[in-house]
Image 1: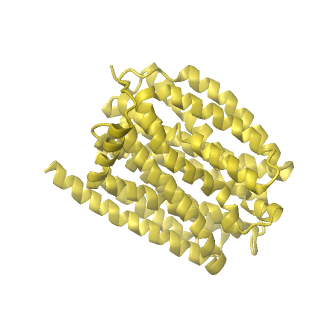
Image 2: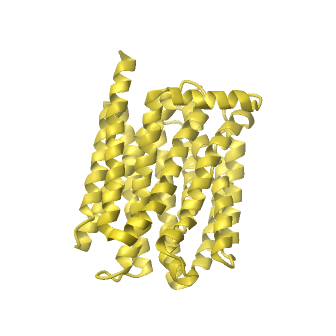
Image 3: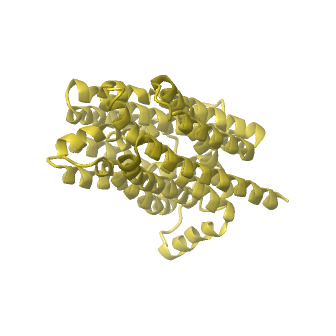
Amino acid sequence: MYIQKGTREFTLTNLALFAAGFIIFANLYITQPLFPQFSEEFHVSPAVASLSLSASTVALSFSLILFGSLSEAWGRKRLMTFSIFVASFITIVLAFSPSFEILLLLRVIQGIVFAGIPAIAMAYLGEEMDPSSLGIAMGLYISGNTVGGLSGRIIMGTVTDLFSWQVGMLFLGILSLIVSFFFVWALPASQHFEPRPLQLASLTKSLFSHLKDPGLVCLFGIAFTLMGGFVTLYNYISYKLLDEPYNLSTTIVGWIFIVYLVGTFSSAWFGSLSDRFGRQKVLLVGIMIMLSGALLTLPVNLIIKILGIVVFTFGFFGSHSIASSWVSSRAKSNKAQASSLYLFAYYFGSSVGGTTGGFFWSSFGWNGVIAFISAFIITSLLLAVILNLSSRRTEN
């Protein structure tokens, strides 16, 4: 019996995975609003400060493949539970980092542990949800990601202004531990998962089999370029808004991340639209919306710049919702591995784009950052067109 919309199991499943997404993404992005503080306190450049995020995302990207494969043998809920508890504990330890080097080391370890949620959660939904309810369920899960990312940034920005970034990490780590217990209680056990012996040779073979599907390869490329552009904007907007002519405080800059709430709406809404109108059309529209938002951040006027961030975020999360659910349905077997490859590209794009964007910021300012982001988004658009053509040929 698959989980259907309107049932108690549907509600509990989505609440549990919403909570898991909250924990992972609140803790993953806690350093992003702190880049200017790290630059000042540890005397590092913006690109080096961004490593406090990129080090986690690159470790996460490679670890996703391992965790996705392990979950095929050891089960979904067990690994997800391990991930959220250990990740929460490391955030508490981060508050006591004596140097930037130690902080980076802890963030690498945390990035490895983070991998226990994203790919496995997507595979869990792909296995347990009724196909007619998968789009909205995936959208709701990604909504938890956006709320987590938003909350982590706002908490860190506000508490840093009031106390220090160390206090902010202590607070968020303890909160995450509390939410972890709710996850364990609420998530139903897998009903359609069939464990297999951990055979690395066969798992590696099945992993590479996904790369023979041109549609999946396009989806992986879309994940890389969209996330690379998205993280780049949020990595360096803090430097822009703390500087002339805006001179905003860390608290206000942190609260600008409230625009993540439009991502909470758009991910669920786009998922619903895809169930009605098809993924092909909705994905193209989402990517074009994201590009429009990036260009709107170019004017000096603060209101227009914030509007651009809103539009950019709306388009990104809507597009990600469509692409991620498409992977889960297109992969006919080893869904966790396919999801792992998608998220490998997603977070590797975050690391590459997020750090490379720092050189564009230092050399060309905000115009250079937007030019870099636009190149990534246009590449996503071209890949989406190729994906649509490939899907039509498959259907015919």
